[in-house]
Image (cartoon, rainbow, N blue to C red; front, side, top):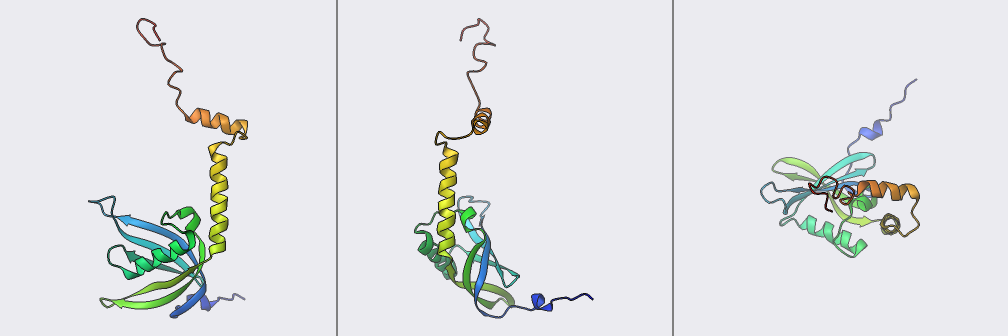
Length: 164
């Protein structure tokens, strides 16, 4: 006998969801002005449903509130996507109509600050290790040397008069 769980196909209801996860966060840039972002795309998983939410950079109150909620957790505006990918949170979900089209919108983001702190600490530890604290392995040193060009290796070999 095969059992199919139909609950995963039910539409979400408007309300607060404490089990949400921010999967992705990406900026889309203007082709004519590559330094100016046009919008921010987010992808949340809420009760097994994938919800995409777009925030327009200019004049979008929700964008400003999203930025403020992130700043409340990390203290600055330097977003590291590796830290924020798959970030647990609580969100309020609304189903809004714009020009007769319906969109899911997220609001009132409450981020898991403990997860953020753990990921930030791990990121800083990884950065320290990659900077080479003098205790790196021989293999890491060899890889690093092979990645860096050695301009002096063939210096003078192909000179006409043999001068270095």
